[in-house]
Image (cartoon, rainbow, N blue to C red; front, side, top):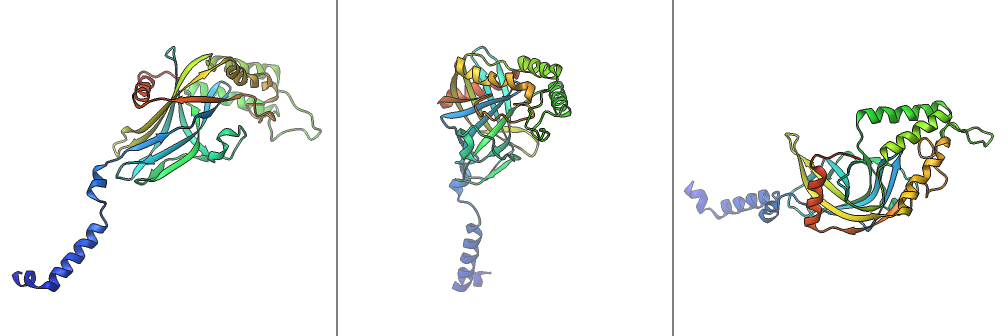
Amino acid sequence: MLGLLRDPAAWSVLIAVSALVLSQVAPLRQILRGRHLRVALPRQFFLWHTLGNLQVDIVVGIRNTGGRDAYISHIDCYILDSEGRKWKLSAQSYVPASSATSGTPAPELAFSGLAISPDQFWSQTLRCYEDIDEADQRQLEGIYDKFYSSGVSDTALPTDGSVPEAPQAVADEARAYFRRRFMLVRGTYRLVIAAMTQSRAGVNDVAGTAGCEFIMIESNITKLRSIVHQYQYGFGITRVSANPVLGNSLVSVKPLGADATTASYRAATHSRHGS
């Protein structure tokens, strides 16, 4: 053994092997940086609804500023008003980032998680849908079925150019559902985006957040409600309106600081109650 240590050739081999091994390991400083995500939001986003259930289309940028690979299992979106009402939405899909300010339908790709390496940046338009309970989901699906069975959909339009209408009772049920679910009014709101990771034990952990504040004025509410008058034709339910302004509103925002974002996230996730 001592003879090997005195042999320069043996040292050369040892040094070469050590260098090869160390080259496959991330620098210690990078490892110590842990996992940390920086989330960025734009100055505007689109607010929609489906029969009163909220939908947010927003460009989200995420950079891994930590030293380890991170896997984002899901992304949550919260809206809070000044009266304590809360809405929880989940990112279910994403569309090309260029569609965020177009207000027109775009192809959706399912969001099923995101692996992001150190210093990597990811940005897309997330489409977040309001979480609703099983009873509301069943009623919503029932309304859809009634419109489809009445022939009121883009896939069942008459060839003579006429626009079919749903039976009055079906349209009234849709409007009643909207009135029960839609609770936005004029006022100041906060929106928080939270990128979540999940441990092997299934425990959710917040990897990064970003927040903003926005004001809903009368014109915003009017735009969101405008589609309701078209429900008898299926617009906003089983048909896409030819007027992209109906049923949505482009909202301008003011960024929140780190402390305000953290406080808003805690408020949103403490005994939350969507709408």
